[in-house]
Image (cartoon, rainbow, N blue to C red; front, top):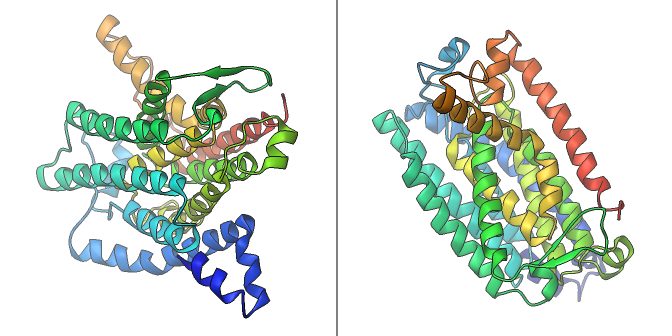
Length: 358
């Protein structure tokens, strides 16, 4: 929106030429989202407290979590609002990639909102089957949109890191893989969102890395130098990623241990889906999976726990997801959080290194 205004103003003031650069607008979008989240955060938290919108803690969860009961939840609302507003402000509204990601963020946030409200009113959220069904419908709709609006072959080809000559045309399989990426990432981030700040900072780091990749993929010279697919106009996606970074850091201000507000499904489902969508759009699904190792490990721990208990009657972990296992082993919550952050940081660096190892 503001891009159009600055384009008009640059006729009279040369300073506004700087807004033509994606890099500058990405930085500005990040700062804007950060300040907006810091501004609306106290307002949202106060409103939730007055409306008794608090977290319900499961009785079978770690005993240390019982003291968190009543903490305002659905704080992910401030992230979603900030990201959408800032993306529409600083992004090129003619760019279809931005609209696809915004739709994914907003759509999965709506599913999370329904789940959070049901938890507060009925002490239990949507059933697993119903939640997955809603996610599947939305995920398939996004996947089909991305497939049928693709303008160049590179948008539907799978690239494998390290092997620069390996490019696999996916055809209709692209829809299925995209669906798995979006829904899988959405649920993985949601499962990891169990400790104060545990999910949001890795999401911020991954978003920052994806923003860099989006810029490189959308730049002819850089993509050619790095031997990665060139997708026209993909650089605008960096605006969204910058907004997510700023909004995520703003949310962490209130979500850091001990949390003043929890993200809720409205935030976790939306952020995960958005990251999955961006990863597919920039054609770096494998790199995204590497960077999301902590999220995938959390999901895998749940799958292993359920499978083991059903087949053998025994549990692999004291409790799943994995962060609860370490809690029951006596690790203080801040230690678990920071160590998971460190692992995420290292995995993001490994993922980025794949851009050159070709």
